[in-house]
Picture 1 (cartoon, one colour):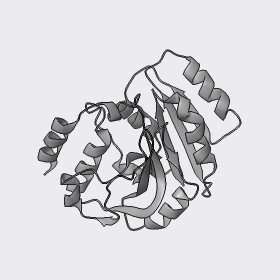
Picture 2 (picture 1 turned 180 degrees about the vertical axis):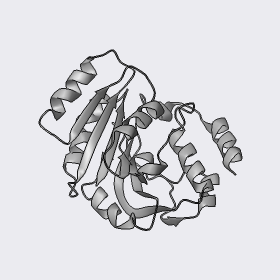
Picture 3 (picture 1 turned 45 degrees about the horizontal axis):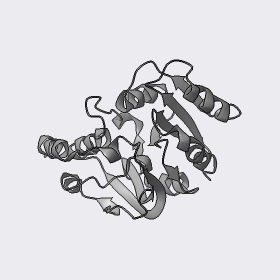
Picture 4 (picture 1 turned 90 degrees about the horizontal axis):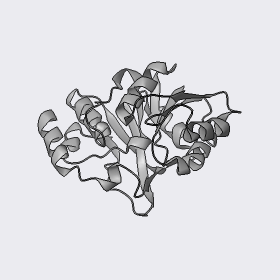
Length: 216
């Protein structure tokens, strides 16, 4: 069974598409934990998402007083009831068979991702290594899409001091500890490029170099 984590700060205008892509999954044994952060209690965003998910008993919403994606993910992880965690950013989407196709690979690999297509302001495919990934590959570039990953719960902890690169730091750290990575060749994840995204509007080049040196 899979616990899906969705932190929400920006991008709520894409929530319905993202949420519907979860509801359409052919694999049904999941729970969804939504963490709304960086807004006042009972904000309009909270009320909107609460209303949209009110009929689905597999969804839990947390109205958090703090701000930060990593802190939100760490909080939600502690609230999960299953042994595997999937991440879906509020502005991204899944193909309907995404979880079903990943699950057979979880017996062999610690982190299982998928191929990806960009949507929104870009419609190309990112350069990813497909199939089994050598851990040293992460020292060259990030070859795991955050919203595509299923991770063993025991491995999930995001550094709260690295907004925008918390996922890459996690992959580098797990690769250093010889965890096993795999990317399905099927395009099952759709990552949205848009101007309100924190990652898509910042230059992380120098911080990426620092992370690679730290985990080399």
